[in-house]
Length: 384
Image (cartoon, rainbow, N blue to C red; front, side):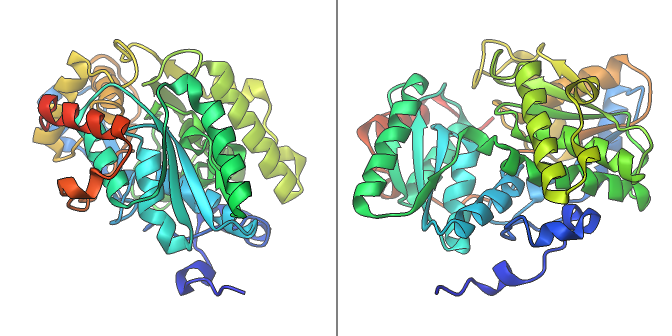
């Protein structure tokens, strides 16, 4: 039997396990992140804006020095699940510049898993270009698809190939958006509540985050409400303001709340207490959806997002990307300028860990569809 690396077998300090110790034996988990991530007051940014309320930043961009961001928490659960099922290979699915794919290929070896990716084209951006070059440089198993609509066929083809090779593998849905994956952000919601309880920041009125695959939002919806039920950090859960970076129906209220509902049901089943199976209405009441920042759609920069990127870099020394985090920050800046109330928390989800250096030979081996995309992106995309 393969012996896991030491950090996979040590007891994990995660708020989910502190709240429900029985889950240590019921939820396989791999330690990837350096958690908890810090919270910081953005006072200089507040002054630049003339903000009418305080802003705190939850630095999940620092969740790992290997590759940070929100996907690390999701992968801790999904890698643990794959290992428990005896898998030796794990595939990420998504767009060419997927953060989930980059996190998968960089973190999978530490979990004893061979990485693979099944990816489709997206609008070109500098952040997407960086991610795809890094993904190919790790030389994972790769399938390039011509369009997102081909994803079900690509997944079926890879599954058939893996069976023929006798490889036990798992294929994650885009963003890891399953109830198991969302448990990572149930724990994150409890983590923020613990930081409030410890006096690291005041109780927020809103938590603002970008929503693409819905996994992070769904987990936070459950985690923020669970903290209130536990009497941890607050009596009434902060509103989760999810800023769309992918269009309806991918980020519809029904899909976000539906995944949150299934996550809560899984939590209740694992804990053995029906009280944690929050109903759809209660979860929906805690969610505010902001579609004003989407612009032309996924991957397309917006003027407000670019302004937010520049201002945040200057006044908060925080790097954003045009696909996800800049659009979420644009919503935050609008709220700070125009609304009064308790503090806001901006949940920083884009990794700011330095990426491995990549030379052209590291990625030119990849499928021609991807290398052509990289060549065109290098010609068109400058650092923001």
